[in-house]
Image (cartoon, rainbow, N blue to C red; front, side, top):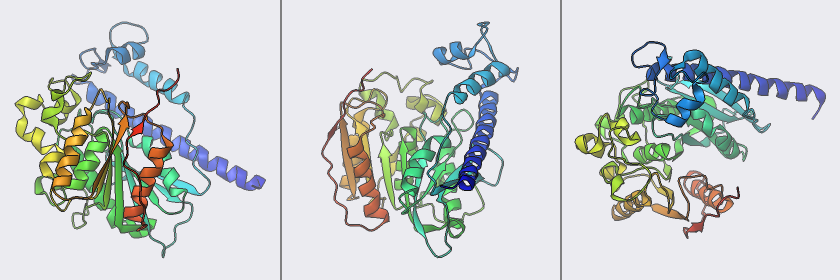
Length: 376
């Protein structure tokens, strides 16, 4: 690479880092304001129930978190993270609003080939982040999407959505569907084939992509967000990684969370304790909406997941099979709640997308993959 090109690439990386930092700061301010329920400019332990996180941020140990302490903590944490470095063949278009407003949660990032041809339409892989519907952000999927785009075969996107402390169900699926409609409406500008859109997500994101796969055409789950209501929000295929699928039965199996508690992530999603809000809990469960016309689905789940019981994916798999939907389940034997980092799994997911988005005759194993514990 010549010296001039090195400068240009360095400048591009710097601009990405600056825009990312600005987006993170805006998102953090929004999170602080949402948590500050009494609007006194401070956060109490009641407003931040995670005691460990509270203790870390409360720098002077006076029992409250000020906006300055919050900002300083997350600035220091982000400063220790290496900047995202995209391959030379890939570029980022960040923070595109899909809901016709300035809410940073209702925006998406595009990960594109360096050059986009008006005549070349590539399939799109969309990532939806996890975090219990109350944490996480779309930036977490950028590097994964860059890996797909760097092959020259795909375009990538990562979707943000309103978290449960801002809006309860079905706001999250309304946002995701609005984002898919926006992507389809703007496909020509970004070299996307609107007929070949696949989605993947982890944990809460796995739940949302599963919902995208099973709920096309269900009126109460479509929403009326954004300016492209004439577009379809359907997807060609789904990779659901350890997402909850049947909220009312999550406590039927042992784990480290009490999901029926009114403070659980699932209860916060539906706006109240699960068992006291059964109708909306069923509505928010992918198993409720399974039908013959659902998208082909690949499910990945750790057999010893302490957060989302493995049975959640077994049940979803069985119902999709019964409905005669194309579905595969890969058990990550002895695996927990994600963090698999397994090359064999990556290759199988790649083959799944190649089969359904590229039309390749890919065959991949669905045999369990044993997870080797990380060395400490």
